[in-house]
Structures are given as C-alpha cells and as structure tokens.
Length: 417
Ligand code: EPZ
Image (tube, rainbow, N blue to C red; front, side, top):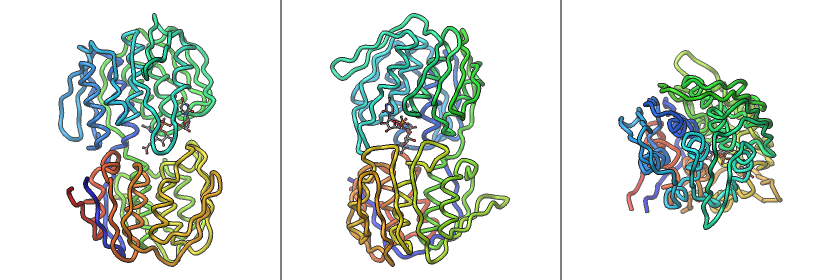
C-alpha cells in the first residue's frame, strides 16, 4: 500500500487553491437521478469518492461524460435500481441514491452501508422519514428495499440533524405530492448547495441552511448546470497547516463564510486570519495557545476538523479539552499522535490534550480520512521522519494534498507500494 514520508520542521509558506467540496459534489451527483435530462457539474474535485460515485451511477445505467473537474450526467436510461454492497461498503455516501431513486422510479434497493472507523453511522432516520412519506421499507440480507407510489409530503422531525439524511429526504420530497417540512434539519453549507442546485432544476425548496426546511413537491425536474463551492474542510485543514508550522499561507477560494467556528478558535490561539483581494491569508505564530473545542452540527465546530485541530493542540502551550459530540468513535488518531509524543488522555467523549514543545516523527497508520490529514499535519510539524501508512484514506477526500503541501515547502513525498 502507498505511504507518505515526511521530514518535518519546515514552515509552510506560499499559496494554495482549494478544490471543490466533496460533501457537496456527492449529493449533487445523486440529484442528477431526479431528472432524465443532463446535469452538468463544474469544479468537481478529483477524488476517489467521486470516482466511486461515478461507478455507482454507471452501474445504475447512467451515462457520464466530462473530464477531471467537470462532469455531465445523463440518467435517462437508468434501469437498475440497486446499489450493491461492493460499492456501498467502500463509500457510505452511496446511500444518497436512496431518496432520488425512490422518488423517480418508485423502487430502490441499497446495501446498508455498515459502520466505519468513526462510528456505527446507521441510516435509521433516513428510512423512518421515507416510511413517513408513504414508502414501504424492508431490511433483509444487509439490503434496504423500498417501494412507493408517489411519495407524500409530510412533516418530518429528525432526532439528530443528519447531513445526508436531510439531503436524501430533501431530494425525495422534491417529487413528492404536496409539502414536506424537515424539522431539526442539518444546516451544513453542503445542504444549502444541494437546495440551490435542486431549485435550479425547478424544485421549490425554502430555508435550506436553517433547521426547518420546506419543500413543495413538483411533477418533474429539468436539467441544471452548477459550479460546486470550495471545500471548507480542505480549507480548514490548510488553515491549521499554517497554524501548526508558524507558516504564512494565502488560501485561494477559501470559503471563510462557512468557517466561523474554526476561525474564532484559531484566532483565540494566536493565528492571524485576514481576507485579502486574492484569498485568505493565514499566519501561524509561536507559541500556539491552547483552547477547548466541542464539535457540533453546523454552525458548531465541524467534527471533520476535530482530528486536525487536535494535532495542533498537541504542540500548544497549555491544556486543551476536545469533546467529540457527533460521532462515537472519532478518536482513532489519538493513539497515532501519541506515538509521535503527544500527551493525550481520553475521558469519555473528551480528549485532554496537554501541549508538548514538539512532536517527534514516527511510523503511524491512517484509520480514516480526517485522521490521515491530522497525521500529515503532525508529521509536517514534527522533528524527524514520519511515515504515514494506509494513505488511500487521504485520496478519498483530498485532491493531491501531498503535492499541495510540497508546493508550500513541506518535505513530503508519496511512496508507491
Ligand atoms: C456527513 O456524514 C459527512 N459526509 C461527514 O463527512 C460528516 O462528518 C458528517 O456529515 C457530520 O458533519 C458526507 O456529507 C458525505 P450524519 P453523515 O448523518 O451524513 C447519526 C468526511 O470526513 N445518525 O450527519 O453520514 C450518526 O451516527 C465525512 O467528509 C443516526 O444515528 O453524518 C452520527 O452520529 C466523515 N441515524 C450523527 O447522526 C441516521 O439515520 C451525524 O451523522 C443518520 C445519522
């Protein structure tokens, strides 16, 4: 398996351009199922997860054209309504075909995604909502099968503000009969991105981005062309890269408006963040202050930035308490950071991070996408050599992050297996 080798100690200086948002691209690709006309997406990131989703759409019978960052999707000839285990197990976001397939074709069979490194990640809320809209849902042999006449608009309350749950039901509700109101809906920017595209396709969605979203069902949707917003988590990762290396990075296409919680915490620990004409300048200072973090659904501190900020707090001057409130097992990076000399104690949902003057390079193993990013950041800041194995996780969600870090001055290289 490929691994990444880093010789740490360099300050990161220069500029980096943020790619399109993975967690917007995936639901927008799923939305193409809702119309038999061609949807065109621009600024699509070149990632493994995007390739997997393309494979799934092709498996269903869609046609896909285009290059690396632009794709045209035609779902006119979809004749297979099954998302198989082989594809779903590699990428749980495959469940995003559930709502659109059911809404357009009245039937769907999707493998249950199963758990992943960061938690059980059930989809019970997705299924309960579809049942409330009139779908017949059964689960057997590891597959969800759902069928319905025309789905009926209704009021749905999510026990937890689920991002893909909100997206799945929002898509299903677009073609339902009548009005659907989603309460305690996810407010993530990627949900707003999906609503914007669906409205361009002729849907009637209001108040996406708040916790109460209203969707008036329509008879059909037409084609749309859409440019995907930059990836706020990739941008946040580079902001932390500047902070952890006392670097100076100009981040182009940085969606600062979606990063308030992270920005406030970074400023609290002494990072300078200011908007310039051509991007957002992020300057790390020494020493790094310590700060407490609680991850929460948007607009709270993003769980997808928890592992990265923990790497930075590992060299802060003081004690930081990082509480993970979204996923039940998202501390897999702690053991690996400890191998690099980090002083971290886990107490329930909280990690107590006692900052050390520096980390030392070591062989470590990536366990999930954002844990991989955390180890890369730690390696770049550490004294000595760090080897990160299982870096296939990285390629799922970061477009050539090793090349982008190298351009900023990191001594980093990907070593083919
Ligand atoms: C989305 O996952 C993102 N993925 C995740 O990003 C992100 O970490 C997560 O939202 C939280 O922000 C995509 O958008 C493709 P949830 P999702 O449903 O939708 C529980 C990354 O690194 N829950 O909002 O799967 C669930 O177990 C990935 O890019 C239920 O109990 O997350 C979790 O504890 C990782 N039942 C909480 O809700 C359900 O039916 C939030 O999960 C659904 C969710």
